[in-house]
Length: 361
Ligand SMILES: *Cc1c(COP(=O)(O)O)cnc(C)c1O
Image 1 (cartoon, helix red, strand yellow):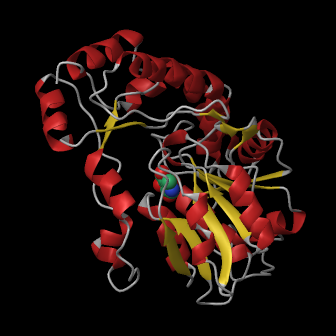
Image 2 (tube, rainbow, N blue to C red; image 1 turned 90 degrees about the vertical axis):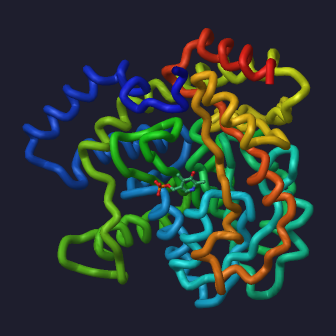
Image 3 (cartoon, rainbow, N blue to C red; image 1 turned 180 degrees about the vertical axis):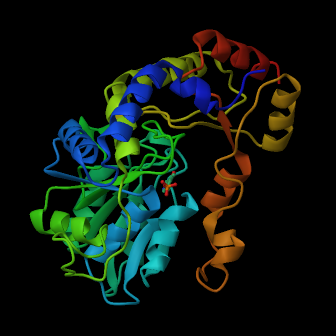
């Protein structure tokens, strides 16, 4: 059986270091906002050459706090891709703002920059982009639009740790880079965790307050805050794994290369472009008979996933919130996408086996 993901195997090479780190936190008696969080924040910030990194409780919280920091008027509009995981859109709704969905480019699956401007009006305050599957969005035209209309830019980097566009890391283009360290992500913790990157001192202070009941000095509350702190145990694990992030990404690239070089023309493969370093959080192929293909692979002991089966605008939870229903490109992706095994624990042999089976479909 070739599994799609196995978190125990994925983390196996880190077990010893994790145990040491856990023991040191346990014995320190300091479990919230201590040295381990500070160390991870400075290491993750340095990795990105970002001035500030603020550790948070989850990726969703990172997106929510980023939006909160701007104090947009209720009902303000935020541009967001129609093809994303629901969390991106939920963050906008939870802040009392209106998500305005924009279709993806069918070649990259990321927001189509040529379709953003038609959705902008005086109520538009921000663009929240998603670097989906581990590929950066096309940043040049997006930055041009951001500047032309003076919009804030928040990057959802939950799937793009270490991905670059023209040599620049995702998470460093906008006012905020928002990260999730959910266990399956390229940089994953052993529980929930997230972070924001920013180069703006004032925004960084606001996020530090928002994550801690609105306070940066104990018992003095400047803002109506939340409890969204990264904890010491997870921060310790993340600092250890961060040292291997580039290895994890290059391993995934090696596996992706096998798929890209060996899969036959039956399948629509990810687009590769020299301006992009992709980190393949997900290796997404497309096929008209996706369900049959998934069953066929399972019959041959290969597990796959679908990211995602239902487009956000068709989710029950979005009834009465997202009124527009005309997103045929997103729907096509959600109908035809299949995610192939590409975890850190998979070997080149595993991938060659998957290719062999796939090419006989
Ligand atoms: C995982 C993910 C999130 C949410 O992160 P959590 O840490 O689970 O809250 C947000 N956006 C995208 C694109 C994701 O893949």
